[in-house]
Length: 182
Image 1: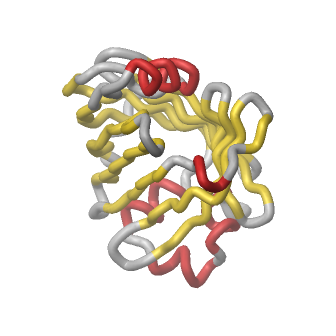
Image 2: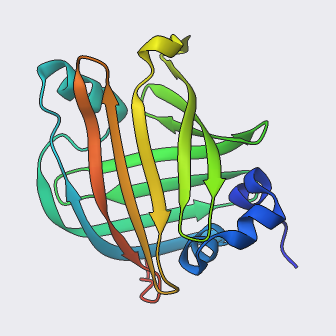
Image 3: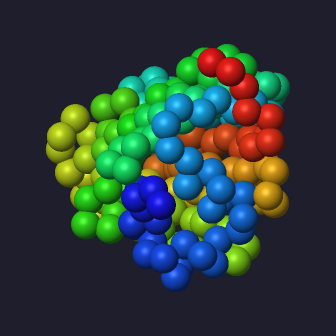
């Protein structure tokens, strides 16, 4: 039996077992996997939000179309490369004290995971930008959710800052039954 993955360790076996099958299947993968899917991205609306999106590597323009997703997973970390129709976004995920830490451009985001039979949601616990901790009152509102059936992993991600508005917004799915060669 393989060692527990990052998400299995973050949630624990009981909570992990409650997740939808597609979510369990995706987060149990080890090694290199490449998937295709569909995605819709929305552009940040303000100049400062667009600058922040550039620093983070999140989508900066409206687009809709094919998504190419590469997952490189080990028990201690995951690297995600999302090739959206208009740009590529990369992040590295690790585990620190039961929190998933996503390093995204110049930011480190720490998430608490919440499991249910309908979805996996990620709640932002803290954030640092260029190594500087963000004050709690300035934390972005983040909605990140994964759901789906056995063959498709659906995702929705939205992040907005007080006053500045939306910095990131994308949603779509990955077809887990049609893994592609790299």
